Image 1 (cartoon, one colour):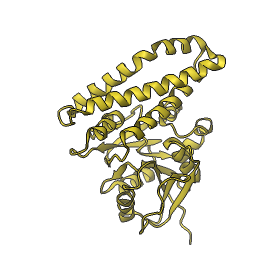
Image 2 (spheres, one colour; image 1 turned 45 degrees about the horizontal axis):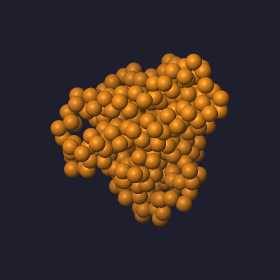
Image 3 (tube, rainbow, N blue to C red; image 1 turned 135 degrees about the horizontal axis):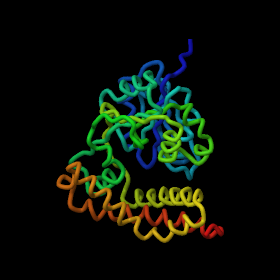
Image 4 (cartoon, rainbow, N blue to C red; image 1 turned 120 degrees about the vertical axis):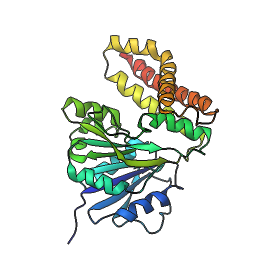
Length: 296
């Protein structure tokens, strides 16, 4: 008898083949018949060939060549068969007990989204630390919290039907902040679970991550500006020079509060400035793209 999966684990693989054996081994060790694993990669990109000893029910989904991680997640969500989807990227390796905890969260079904926490190897280089602080510093100290505004989709479980009901958003990819805003507007709750832990193992080069930040910043600026009235868009454009300063300060303050400032290499802060600037340039380009179409 064919078992319909309860949980679909979706791994978005971008510029990172080296971590896949560890990720898949972690999942294989705890997989059950009601779990499926979807590995989503861009056409012509890694992961080829697939690692051996894949978890039972693993499928490879090939996405469009120009896809970003939110597009890979979207394609996985659409192909998934589970009532819940657990999202990962190939730069985050689940720790022991992760899949068991994710399955329990899916079976409980109390929250539309449950996010987890991220660790970073202390011996990581400055670029890896900068990426970790930029992306995950808010989820670096495990604690249980209900009614949160956001979780990091790189380590989170979602109710699939709730995502599919937001088809207008999903058409552009799974950009989680927009979905979280929609969920909260509908009265749905998000939670942080300290038992959902992954280790960040960066495989991006600084240039690769910088390019990713520009691309993600462009999409953010484009979508945000497109949803604004003309007066609001003009104010947004005027405020753009302050974006890198505000973003850098926010990350630095959170890192200080979490105690990471003294643990990260000194060069981390220059790399962080580089990545923040790359994001800000992409965001500005997205806003200006809308403006060039006569929006301002």
